[in-house]
Image: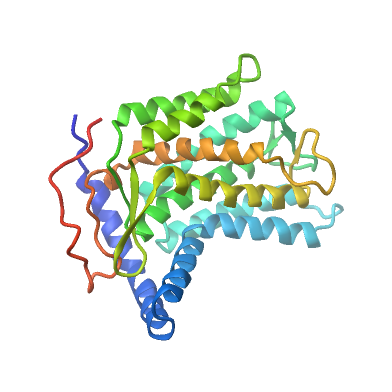
Length: 313
């Protein structure tokens, strides 16, 4: 059946888009004036990506900062501070309209699925959290759910900031089925054969034709969706290494001073599809049409015209 975009989704998205346009427009004008061409494009792309992962960046920065200054004898434990910091950051994001309530629902959903996986994996011995904490349930500090939430936040924000559209998009039910299979395999491979190689192949087959259309400065550009997922998983693998280097969590069998196994990069690649489909379960606006507007409403491109076609799902 056709996927119809709800007006309730478009209204807060449009208002928030206009609210943040002035920052991006001023920076974009400055970049294009001083660094025309490919250098300006690259700098703008880096800025927008950093802006999109602001929640995760702040949480990662606080993980590093607390590791450097925290004293175990203090009344407030480090894990507890990180939990309170994550809650306060989320509240400020909503207060200053850096995220919509629609996006917050997406983040909460991925937060819950991520926390459930944390409980299982910690008890299965895949990794652990060595420090004490009051806000720690079944061996898992509650701030850990916000690490998954930061991935959901990034996906929701990057779609809006880059005015992304995903086209041609596969049937929605198939994407949902693949996401469920990936999520279940994270649990089931402890008892049954690991099918992740088949899941890797399934992501390539299902999303082989899907282009991630986005606007960086003025002109629409695109990237194959599997490549976008791979590049994002590399960034998350780097963040994993920061987490283990600070001792915030430790993988089973990981030697001191060694990097996180590259197998975790593959795990994040698959988990990103779960996160993305979670976003589309709550909001499918980016799947509703292959054409997309420019981020600068004064310079809207005309060579991608709106299409009446909609993805089937």
